Length: 433
Image (spheres, rainbow, N blue to C red):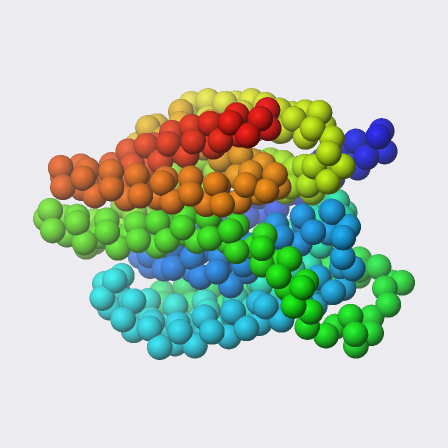
């Protein structure tokens, strides 16, 4: 028992340290490319990111969670799990790329109202197979609670991204803002390949691979999809909301008399500056969310309800305390932090309103992971759907009241309160705490 507890805490510490370094590098990267791309480039990037997010969720199929759970339960050989996962994502990625090539023109011109987005949408679709392949390997290591390779890979990948941005993006920006944003999206191909290569050094050397193991196995694929589909459905619902968000916001604010320039600029400030600062603690939350899945899966398999409840309470308390601390720091120092990190004060007004509620927002990821690991993926999906509907409806109504970008800010707060309340209610009802 002591050894198992040490593995859990060691895994969590590795992820926290790695997450902190990765997050710090991510902030440096964001600072650099924000200053290179300037407001126009950031606005353009922000407009396509919801589409990128939803398609990435679909193509990766929540396989890190599915593999993490199955590997932790130790029911199947990991080679069979990984080979069958690869077959699934290759098929899904191929279909998404074809669909994006066909519909990119319609999405760019009719939904996003920005013709330059067409090339960006096609470019980003070619990054998905590489991100998906990397996510499969991450799922395996997380399930084995071997988080040191995960940490090393993430840190080295971010360093490579930093080098590429410093050297390549300024050259592309001199040619055009469009090319610079496109280059920023495409660099994921290089960084994900590099990440996969790093992981290969940590794969067990004594693994026996034969043709029988690599052959498609429908039973294994069924086990993977039984976890992945409800999980990815919940995430897709959330990302559909994120995808529809700028479309509904743009069209309603245009209808209310706001200019397209105002919408693009303010939406860019909200996402690139306000939300970036507010999500600073996510390295800690992600560490807890990742390690809690194999831990709960393992103890539920052993029918050890005491340890399941204990881990859930430890995770929620840790995240809440960290969330409150960061929320207070961000409220007090929002302007100096924005100035230091992004050389701007744009978005400070949105932070002041959102920050008190983000102490609860940080709990969402852990609560979602708890439900996934406990076998309540469908209930988590339903809660995500309710949250998205509530957010989009409230945002739409507020837009009609001519509240500008504050329509989105207030809708985000309503969404946080709704989702956290429903998650807690479900966990209580299922007697997980």
